[in-house]
Image (cartoon, rainbow, N blue to C red; front, side):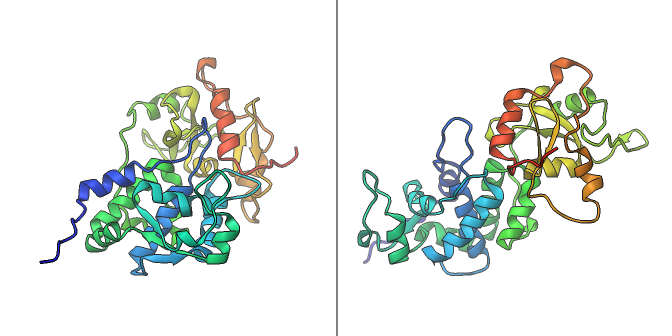
Amino acid sequence: MPRQRKTISRQDLLDRFAAINVWRRGDVRAPHKPLLLLFALARLSRGEGREVRYSDVHGKLGGLLTEFGPVRKSVHPEYPFWRLQHDGLWVVRDAEQMASRKGKDDPKPSELKRVNPAAGLTADVDAKLRSDPTLLAEVVGLILEAHFPSNLHEDILTELGMQLDQVVSRRRPRDPAFRERVLRAYERRCAVCGFDVRLGNLTLALEAAHIKWHQAGGPDIEPNGLALCSLHHKLLDRGAFTLSAEKRVLVSQDVCGSDGLDEVLLRWHGREIRRPQSAEFEAGLEFVRWHEEQVFKTPAREF
């Protein structure tokens, strides 16, 4: 009787996705592997085949890295396409046909382009996810929550052709007092535009934004928080604007539009944000610099 292949357990699969080895150097963001996995999971959710050619990954993943990663002179979709294999979730076919880079086990980019290998989730992972749509939704939620703020989740899913209702939220515990402390510090007004609408005693559409993302190790303390209306919170997380060392609003040159752009964003360019009640709550320079380097879509407009 042929020996049956052991089926991966639900918990083992979740543990594999939770433990992916993301490249780290200080506070630098490297969302390459998470975005590649989300790309593969989106294909799976649509019933597409397990494997995909490098040429198809290169363009799509490059676009995702440009849109949702730090600004860089060049993006490198080839790195996760090969290196995700080390996490036990991904396999590349025809590896033996490609010459490696000197001193590395990665193929040369020219070799990936020449051979155009197929790759995909490992067969056991693919089979487990296809047999359990709720597990697939949980894995997508796990990756999103571990690597991106919630303001970006819907944008990423839309770019991948998925819906938020296809995701099971796995939000990590947050300090429940963080929001209240930050809103109190800024007297319950948006630090950019002053929005302070209430319904009775209820504050509406005002949020405590992390300057350095929680997913990047940003702490739940007032100097890492800004009271922002929901719109300016979203724009901060997308990198449409950042703060200077002097706490002035800096708007990206990539921001464009017609109706509402001046009112919503450009009118605040170069202006200081509203300061908190106490100097001890002011935005910390280390958090502001992290946002400018890792999230903001440089360069800024001139004053």
